[in-house]
Length: 288
Image: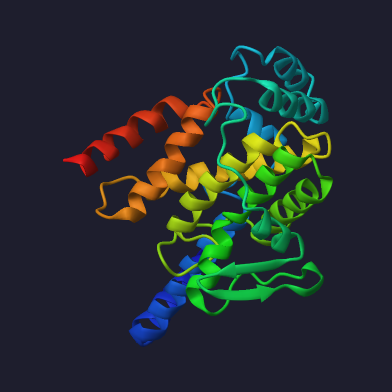
């Protein structure tokens, strides 16, 4: 005990004689280390790390989910994924538009995207061999690339022609983006081309509209649909975190649109009723 006391006393004396600046720097490094450790444990509200976490966010007593609920109860998550993918692919309501009444594809643009060629803001780029970079210059060009409006043209072209080339490229680009751009740890306004708040809202809408046209394809596998839905759940959490307060401008209305579409299309997600109410409340402020 005396040794411990002597150690503490000598440590206290050392601190009294040590300059303050290094001590503050030491504390700062410690705090940063603690934050990094917490982040590394997956404490981010935007992460849905696996099927167990995904299904924990769903009301499994929702109509039509009995098979999903039973599979989750058995911890058979492969079966749960397959059944939930079947459920969202075959239900007729809710939906964004009536079957056969979608906006027609721009076939020329769809064919270009099949060749990995993108014309944005008057500039055309081709990603040779399908090797993508998602951030770069011109800045606005890559912003639009990450919003992924071109996926709708691919899905619509497939819906209209049945040609597998379109659905296969749709699936490839969707999975490539999700794999290359894991969810970030915090909301971002402008500093990220992949995960800025505006990109998240725009991309969510693009993914949802394209999915309605692509979801029934036999080539679109259940695990691919699950990857999309899990990422959409992360997109939703991201938008919820960013849209806590009223913010003027089109940024917020774009994100609110994404939130509302998620809430309407996935009423079985536990957050949907609250998300819908909060988003409508903010929308009303924009109309005043």
